[in-house]
Length: 84
Image (tube, rainbow, N blue to C red; front, side, top):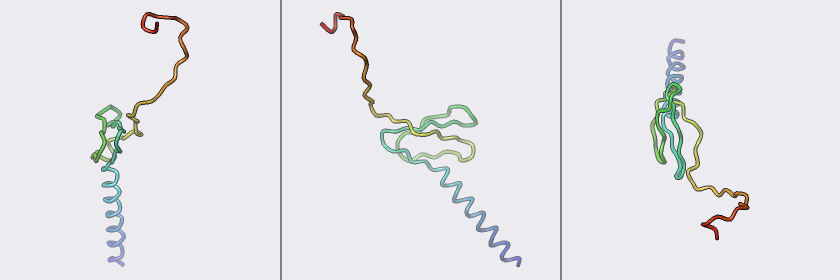
């Protein structure tokens, strides 16, 4: 009975350790970035590649796309010197 209690406790500790390591490692793809807040205040920006954060203290926000975006504007009715 006592050995099974230690086994269950060991499995729970091992799962908690694996979960903590998974939360500590963040992989950011190319052309993307992620912001990190520590205790509600901006700390840094994660760049592409493998990054380490402190789990349970740092909050990592969703990815930011760094690629160029095409935006269309309405035509301008005024003729200026640069578009003659």
